[in-house]
Structures are given as structure tokens and as C-alpha cells.
Image 1 (tube, rainbow, N blue to C red):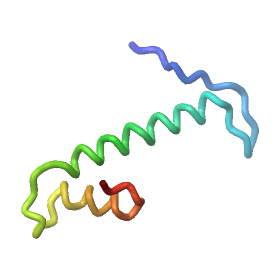
Image 2: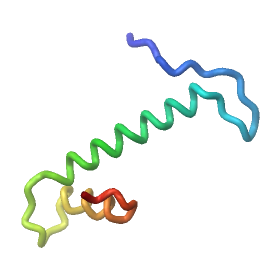
Image 3: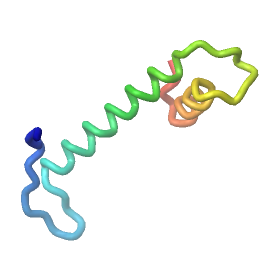
Image 4: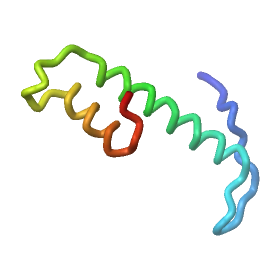
Amino acid sequence: MTTNPYKCESHKLDLVCRGCMQAWIARHNKLLEFVKSISKNSCCINCQCLACDALELLREIGEAE
């Protein structure tokens, strides 16, 4: 079993602890990296495949290369 490097500290209603914020950023960055890798798969550009959907999502969030 792996240990979680993001230690959750006590936080209140509108405030999150540093560990929770770091974990959220890490998840976001990994997901973005994954979607970018999918978008680079070969595609015919005229279909609705996963690579096209990933590229469209990257364009929507301003991350298309």
C-alpha cells in the first residue's frame, strides 16, 4: 500500500489545507497530461474518436498545442 504524500491538515468550511490543495493540483496536472497524450494518437480527423474528443476538450480549455 502506498502512502499519501499529501497530508490533510484541519480545515474549515471555505478554507482548504495546503495538503488538499497540493493534491488537487497534482490530480489536475496528471489528468491534463493524460488527455494531452490521448489527443496525440493518430486519427483521420473526420471521426468522433477518443483522440478527436481529447483534442476538442484541450481546445475548449485553452490547452491545445
